[in-house]
Amino acid sequence: MTSGSVHINTDIKKKVSSFLVGSNKNRRFGDKLFHGLVFGTAAYTLFIIVIVVFSVGAGSIKIFSQEGFIGFVTGTAWNAVEGRESYGALPYIIGTLMSSGIALLIGVPMSMGVAYFLVEMAPSRVSGPLSFIIELLAAVPSIIYGLWALFVFRFLIKDWIETPLYNTLGSYIPFFNQAPFGLDVFTAGIVLAIMIIPIVSSISRDVMKAVPDSQREAAYSLGATRWETSRMAVFPYGKSGLLGASILGFGRAVGETMLVTLIIGNAIGPSAIPTTLFSQSQTLSSLIANEFNEASSDLQLSALIGLGAVLLIITMIINIGARIMVSRMVKVSPGGRE
Amino acid sequence: MRLSSSSNEEVTRYSPQTSDNDKRVVVAPATTQTKIKLSIQNVNAWFGKKHAVKGVSLEVKENSVTAFIGPSGCGKTTLLRCINRMHEMTPNAKAEGRVILDGVDVYDKSSDPAMVKRRIGMVFQKPNPFPTMSIHDNVAAGLKLNGIRDKKLINEVVEQSLKGAALWDEVRNDLHMPGMGLSGGQQQRLCLARALAMQPEILLMDEPTSALDPIASSKIEDLVQQLKEHLTIIIVTHNMQQAARVSEQTAFMYLGELIEYNPTRDIFKNPQKELTEKYISGRFG
Image (cartoon, rainbow over all chains, first blue to last red):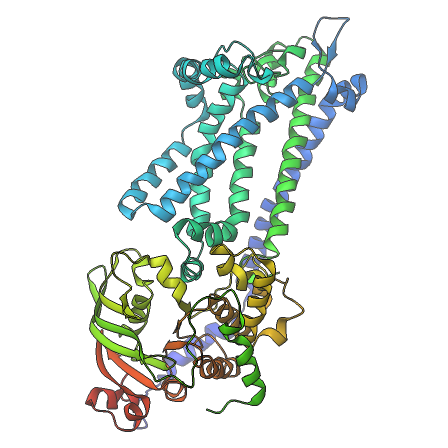
């Protein structure tokens, strides 16, 4: 390159330089403003949790001082008659955990199957449309599932699943020994499973997709079949993510209100303890939804808020438990980062 | 390349003959005449519509090191992946032709792709140990997969394989630690040990040192020299000096075609084709 071929216009240089050495004040102000805004949004989340915990705590003080926290959590009565008022949350805790547990037992394996099929087996012309349908299902409001279950699905469950189970196993295993009615903890669990399958499979699919092909090839190169490759490379690599997806599904099932209110049978008091798979029951959130409007006394209102407090504690325990499990796994996991 | 006496000892200990349970016939390296271990006949490979390997044929001698060289996208890695039927695992990928291993076509209808991979081991471009497994479990992964439950045997093979990959001395006290905790070069040798644990007859190495620093690379190169006493190695490399250092035969590929396949010495000193000469003298690629 000959000298002089690069021509620098000194005029332009001066103009540009005047910008570079000029004041930075406005830009620094923008920076500060941005910091302030972002800090505000972060503080907001803290503010909300404090308010929620405070109001739930304040609202339930009355019932906890009346029954004692342990007494409330282990109590089974639900008596709103003035002068003989007594409230316990145990049946609804069991109802909540049982319906969500059934949902998890059915929903998680199904979701893993769906995700596995989409990522590892289906050709792209199948997996694309199918993924889209699953995303659509995930966006269906739960009340729609509830209505469909109430008017259509519960009869199918009763006739095709519950009655055969009752007829064959009912006389041997007490857990199945109740004439099924269709509105019970089992139906609620199945419909909750149907509700969580789309979201759990959609997240699980993303998790499995994120497993690098080099991991699959490592397993293939050792002579692994397709299934062995998944067992060796895909599931272990993605297990913290898959666990996260399952916990999210469980969280949704635990907190779901209207759908459950429609189909769990809405039993109250000791009879709400599901002694069989086909018992009418009640969950913490469905009882709140059922009774909040008609709460006649302050103590009953406080008892309902107390149910909310118990629900809050349960979901927190689940979330913290999941975090501990995930962090334990991540230590030996992808990327080797601490 | 001469072996030092210490590494010689490692090699003897690695030898598959030391394992009683190994019923496979092992050919003693020094005494037998070189026979053709692998014969690639008119192999074609596609990615969708892209014709990546075009009618390549070549023969590989037992206990030798063969290098595939060529510019990026020339099909050398794809050809390598056709040998153990890894290529067809990629969606839309297709391979045709014959790859004869000890007289049997691995593409024969009766041949199981998973079985082929048990006999033909592979080391990849980037180290890919299983992140949730310990060092020991990474090496033992293939054995457990194939139903070996005998703990004593597994431990023996793990030790032998790690020695074969010259990693034993560095990790012997940390076998329960995660494989991902190792350095990049150590991880690659761990992957080599994982492949060796399967007692493969052929080892395919796909640019095994491209993600490693020079010291780690030279360790891998030394290992290639030692391991060829026991198995047949095919190595894909971008690095022509590496091909010159480690291989006896070199195949030069360009745009999916095999341009020249000759003893390495001849390829670098006296190339038959103009294209080869241009490539090795750095005028393209």
